[in-house]
Image 1 (cartoon, rainbow, N blue to C red):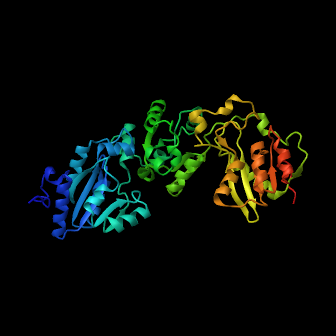
Image 2: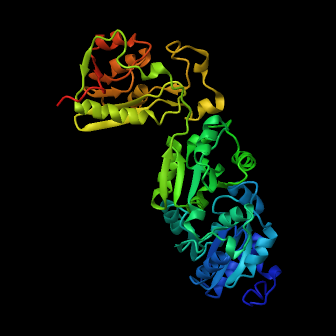
Image 3: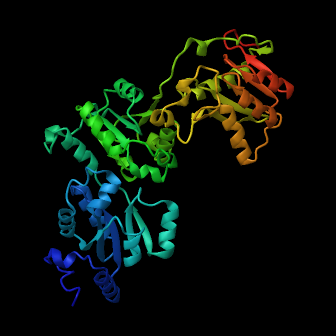
Length: 469
């Protein structure tokens, strides 16, 4: 019969490796006729290790017959970068085929449609790791394509990616070379590297005690559209190659979403303090795994005029009120997240019940735009042609988001770290904001008359003298 030998531990690779979909369907049908409970799992199984063996044994325990889908070389490369897999697909297929408990092995190709093998086999039990499917995807799979989904934790203390990183450093399989002491796993860096600039070089120099640099791979674009918008961004593998040559003593790894949780293993993870990386850390709950330290990475021209005090020619109200200073301090903290080279501005909208929203000036389509494409403001003096920029101002961002959400700003207060430019002043005048608190200077004060004419009260916040009660 066509499934003869499948239940024999001594059966050959040719009997257990099935590529023809028609034959695979026939085997699945015969197994169901025999009353076998079919289990399906899949993976790349690159550099097979104990964790893989334990995982496959656990998967087999959920049923009578285990089918394993092994990712093709092209599929692994698309997910993990051009340096993977370390072991060619035929070797990986043979090694998985002869693992205890594995009944049949097939190849998963890069061109296969989503969930193709699952739809083909329709297993009684689908086994996966925690990072493979979302809660919504599990619900859909169980409703349409399988009996139930069983989620297993990874069963190795050292992942394949970590083993490859150790090989890269020359620490190959010697027990003496295996990391045990905390000193060997002290610090890692995780970053998105779309372009090589002095800003990133300075960031890496500040953290040259890190044992490993993790670079976000292509797969993160699926969950973070901001990466897809960086169409001129450097390919992650090219960026990694550069860092390997420029920093030969540091392990450099391109990491994909499914591998990120296990790739982070150090006692401290240092991350650039930008919106994207904060979202990545939150989405993958990395702060629950290790200590996460955010450090600014963006360049900034620290000019004397940017630190000046009360703006010249201003004759409006002044306050040293403690609450005003508290909201101003929040706006100042937000300004540090800006990627703008010339001016960093933070802003907060406050209503009767406290903070409504907060923002900082940022570039579009992504905050990395000035690093990839350059900043058109380089060609102008401060205050000239403020409209020629790839950045949206903090005040405009707040007002635009409020409009999108249907939130009225009538009667609210705006706290901003520098006096609004003329364009933002016009938006504020039409928004219903009643008071504008600001600190620091601005080289263009034409917006003053626009705001006063609209009945917006202007209040400069004095952050230098003792607060008033």
